[in-house]
Length: 130
Image 1 (spheres, one colour):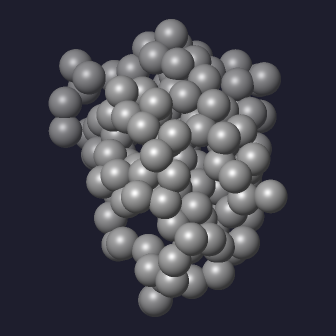
Image 2 (image 1 turned 120 degrees about the vertical axis):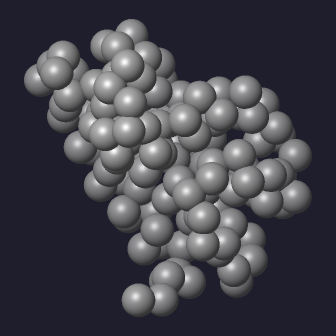
């Protein structure tokens, strides 16, 4: 299946993932930490891809948030401020999807940090897409 080149579709999916994360946060993260971190990563990925499509006609087929943010930065240098934090979310792409090492299970505190990161990124991207 080809990726959509309509930034609004990516944004809609990013918002759906964000709302799932919001709901989990409100109902309680405990026991869902890894999945919660993963859904935060997914929302961030789709936000970055929406931003890229808003500014160009191409979205890379990657889940690497650092790479995507680097591409986004070519259109808006102010996004540089997210590099340190986005790297934290980037770690959740694999560790939450596959049971490769149960010693890397995420904590509630890490999950809350993941939500804070995607919330900040979301606020910034939405402001730039208006």
